[in-house]
Image (tube, rainbow, N blue to C red):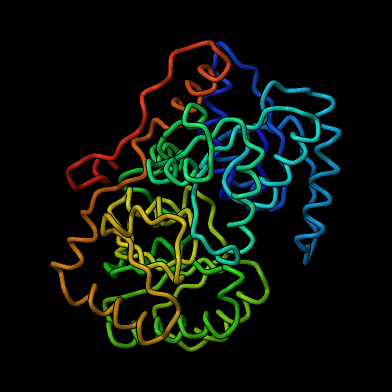
Length: 385
């Protein structure tokens, strides 16, 4: 199992845990450390000790450098281990490059969270193409939803090589979200304890750098100034472009709490206590609906349309007036908010990792084909947290 970023680590942690306990597989974990500090936080939270650590991260690293360092580092690891299968996750440069390294050594590849598509190779960039390239190499595809399976079938993937599992991020949430959670950060504890309607914000996409993020930040500032009962919590990405723009935009704005990137346990519980989530992230589009939180996606397209169709996620882009108007409606119209908050969660039931293990057993001829995940027909997919 190979991963390198914080989102990958969160979503692969339940798979690592299941495989480590398996009677049929020996687990070997390699991390590229495409992200370093944020990755290490997740490894500590889920008590995962990698067998190999490429430690590739460098300041201001480029996609060219990440690709070259991962490919060179994994050649040595894969030649030493000679695994029966290599599992990768999602859409990062680590994902595609690991699949390529395995292909060069003729090792089968399993792709967790396979089949997500926007149809635009530059949005998200470079993730959309990373998924396509990994899919061409992959031998066994673990699709989180039936829509993801349909995308793979349209691309010619054999149906017997696809398993619909649900998303492993829901497995992770089940482990870390706790009722009555108290935050270690005094600033977060104060914000959560004062009764504000909290808007949780994350931004980092390359395609939103510059003017698009400026529009989003101006909209948020208008919202806070118009609603004394609203506060914004914004864990700011460490990328200097995002960091400097956020600091400048909210320098004199009340009730906006800018923090460093949060450990996953803190972040997941903050999400659970928030009123609304604004993000250009992919993973939050899956996590927040599981917690009953409406999500406004700061992008024009999404590779995760299931929640948009279910009604718990809305695409709003980065236009200042559109973002402001949409947030304003959710703050002012309880019926609209309730409808979004209680829509069906289409992404998982907490058993995705177990289905992945069962799918691997079936792939190797050691077990029956597992049952597939299907979302509930009734609303309230977040209940139980």
